[in-house]
Image (cartoon, rainbow, N blue to C red):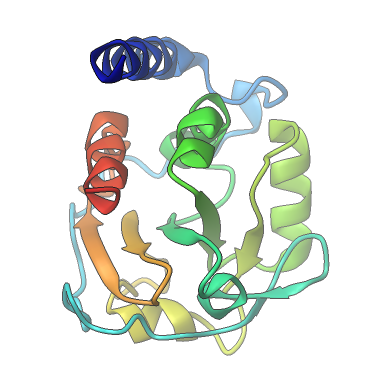
Length: 201
């Protein structure tokens, strides 16, 4: 029975990963002509200020829905995947978060909520996420004080945007996975799934 469950979970993950890679057209509602392409950027332009095994810096940021939210909101209840993206209305970012909609069953299976963070202001994020369609997770603005949370985690770039970075925080508030991507490349979903599986071991 355990083997059958493992096979079922593996097949479900495979379907989701395949769907993720097929999602290259980006968010369903965004017109590609509305996307600003900054060109190729310096892959990483910051220095991490947190480490695995440490308590994740807590914060509260305003979400697009108007709520003040942070990792502490889910302490003892859910794991939290903090997803920093550099900027709204840019190509990779506009593909990345809609991909997490496809992977929602896996996040829920591993009792994990995503917190999307950008240094854009709330009106910009409201318009951008509205064009993407419904995202199932909160999207937060790190606009003012500008990039404060990005800076806390050591992912604020010299141009004032954040890195494309992932931080997985367990239910006790401890950092269990950290990945700073090449800003020009969408993070691999398989890597995220593996980090979620590791929490359940």
